Length: 377
Figure 1 (cartoon, rainbow, N blue to C red):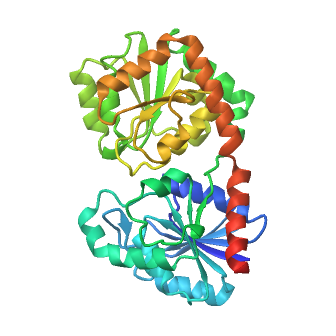
Figure 2: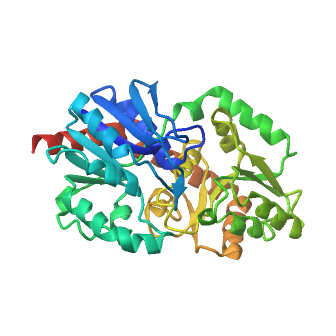
Figure 3: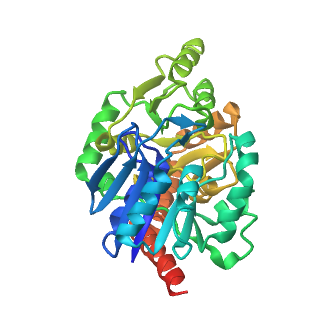
């Protein structure tokens, strides 16, 4: 089989969707030919060989409402199809640009859509795009989601009338970086810098839907011997620093900036609790939750009634709180920090769940099963 993926972006700072695509293609190359068509950061065309597959970066005019504007992407997709004769086009939504590009491919190419989340913020643009979205949802041979709650919580999948076309394939992560002895040792070294204080770790782009403002506010309620290690950066970084200063939390909220991939495992291992305070359903899964679970850490997150809560099971692997409620967030964090037994129990359950469900093999094999099913049909 041959498949062309539309993976949105490919660069050093890409987000969870793009990290998922990179891991997925790394495994699919063991069984088939895959290419990845993405938007470039510049007006230049690039081809990259990585992990056994090719990434084609199409010239981009920039971003509008988070969507790359790539006028030549449909033409490039059709040219690549003439060369490779793809049997499958695999789109990763939300991404209207890849939708437009996929329309340039012949109708006999099987169409797979990975539904990562609904379109949440761009409501006015959604009104214009919705008829086209409904058409491609109705046409798709298969729609894949990382959890059952992706389907049940979606308000934009109504055009898929046939439930047999809906497939749950859990997202997987690479556990090996988190299981290296060096990662455990580096975590212990990091803890010593904070003289035995409790540590909460959070990492995210500093943007509105990640809810980091509420986590910083919650630190006023969290027991005073606790430090928040906050990784990542973004347009709200300076606002968050100003908020911490205004609450006199400069010593208890440490802004780490962008953390290199190889240093991430140490931060997870150093923490007592991991917190993902995202407040909008744009956060539909949260790969960082699974990474924390891989390190045996309990999770505190918000109840978004979607895949986020499928990953972190309330009372089993961690705790859920209402969105935008710093007091509730503080109480949940204190509950775990005050109870060593509960923290250990939930951390062990989190690790077992991650190793059971969110593996690369499960993701790779599940995707191949979908491909084989639709190509046989």
